[in-house]
Amino acid sequence: MVADEFERLLQATMGLDAATIGSPAVERAVVERQAACGLRDPLAYLELVRASEAELQNLIEAVVVPETWFFRDREAFAALVRIVFDSWVPHHPAGTLRLLSLPCSTGEEPYSMAMALLDAGLPAGRFRIDAIDISERALGLARRADYGRNSFRGRDLAFRDRHFSTSPRGWRLNNAVRSQVSFQQGNLFAPGFLPGAEVYDAIFCRNVLIYFDRTAQDEVVAVLRRLLTAEGALFVGPSETGLLLNHDFVSARIPLAFAFRKMSAVPPRVAAVRSEPRRRSVPAQPRVPFPPRVPAPARPRVVPPPAPPPSAAPATAPAAGIAEAARLADQGRLAEAEAICQAHMRDHGATAEVLYLIGLLRDAAGRLDEAAQYYRKTLYLDRDHREALSHLALLLRKQGDLPGAQLLLARASRAERKGAG
Image (cartoon, rainbow, N blue to C red; front, top):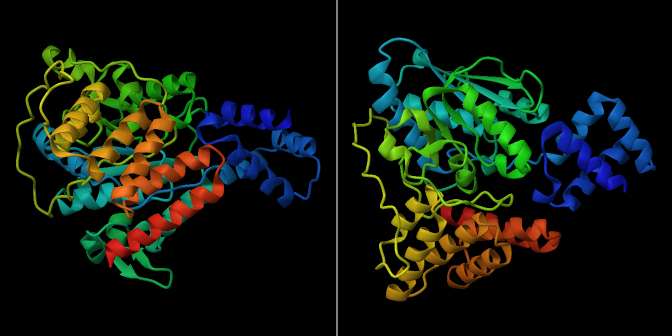
């Protein structure tokens, strides 16, 4: 089938496993570009894509639909600040901190990294951020740095007052932040991608590994490992923790940050803590409930790391709180996290927060039907739960229910505006 040929071409070019976004999404992109090229025959368009690098890039642009905003998952940026001031600055009285955002999409992530460090007091001359994406269209928007309302979500928007000015489109980022980030087009699977080793002190590569098959995931993790310094930190998405733990990385033990270090960089006692094996996850972008705020613009104090977690939590353990369950989920310890959630419900009854977290755990384990049930239970108790709405919409989209997904996303957008109002 021609559709299968397009999926294989995209997998070979950019590592995309079509099953993770659903074949209908690829088909829509093909139809869109085929019409734009004035071709009626899918085979003729397939030959054009194979022969033209420019049209292959156009197809990739049609498939890649960025979904990001400033300070998405705030705990990761707070953890970056903590790691920089607690670990990097004391050992590097001179020199430049090197950071990487990959993929950087339309720029919200690398700019958030820059704002977090500047607000925490790190001088502009002490750090540089490289931001790379496969999409030239997304990079153009990132360089323009002119953003609309959808890029600003949540209630804490004080950073917008500090770093943006109003523009006809919405808000334009100031030059002090923009100058810290260097954008470039790049493909993780291209030969010779970012040559060199131990280049970056911190890498943000979040919610992209889940779109690849296992072979491609292994290839990308090898690239990230090569690029990360011996003491560096790698930030991934919640559904990607098991993959890192299976590649000789260990958790940085910062709750809800999903940050990892090379096993060689931590004491043997900590490195011995490993995760249970996990099945492939789906293209969700789960968020943990009630993320902490980004720290106020002051140099963070040194906080000693928490003690290593216990090796196991019995299923009958008393309720230890949703935060403890989220911490275990951060380390890929899904069964232990769910045991605490179930105990919490036995002792305190079902709440939207605990049902949502169980949904995330089932989602991360690849148990999609069960995840959808828990997201729906969450919405029964809290009809405006934005994260549950978003994740359930992603599951419906993958299953081909586009109208249902669009309705849920519209509800999530209304809930976002209500929360900000």
